[in-house]
Length: 256
Image 1 (cartoon, rainbow, N blue to C red):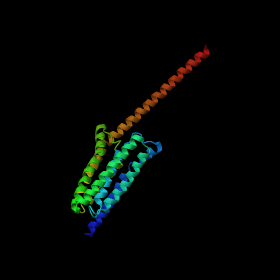
Image 2: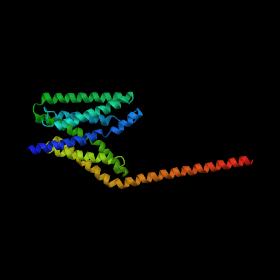
Image 3: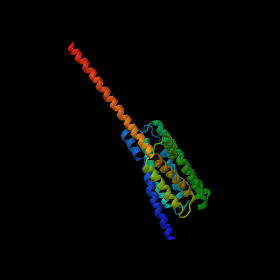
Image 4: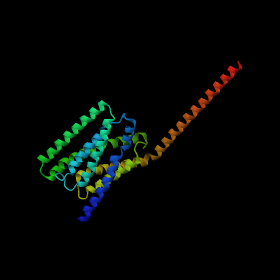
């Protein structure tokens, strides 16, 4: 029994570390926003969606809902803080229209989490019922979060290029899914198992796509580079010809 608890704790800590890496992965985007002083065409929706997803999981991990889930709380509390920082930065560097949109979505999310918390705590009086209600919502939210990876995978298949699907993120997504799937089996927790089992499958699919289209991606990049060199070479040749013609014109002018 002790070894099972220890194994669950170790796997949970590993899952926390990997998930933290995934939460920090948009950092380069916000460094770019900071440097440019504008969000340009970036959308706040992924960060707002991740925020409410983290809040629901924090609620699920509370002792009054699902006891013994402290590692679920730690990573999702960290995720909540990170997403709030992203949203604040987005708010600071966006125009009035986008700010209003962010505020409205945040208000909806706060109202939703508040109502869900009150419903769970005051209507349902057992851990199993509370876990079922919040856990089911967690599953639905996580499934919704897979829309973005699916869109990227569709793009990879369409373009036969993995240029916009970084290997590091695909590996991290797969490892994160595996870690939390194992965690959900020690002991069995269907509400953690289902979304992370799906996450593992999506991560594996991304790795298979990466292996399938890695060579074609290299060929596409090399072709673009060659094309760029040809255009540059043509530009230099054109520049030389223009200079020769100008030199001839100047010579003829002096002769006259």
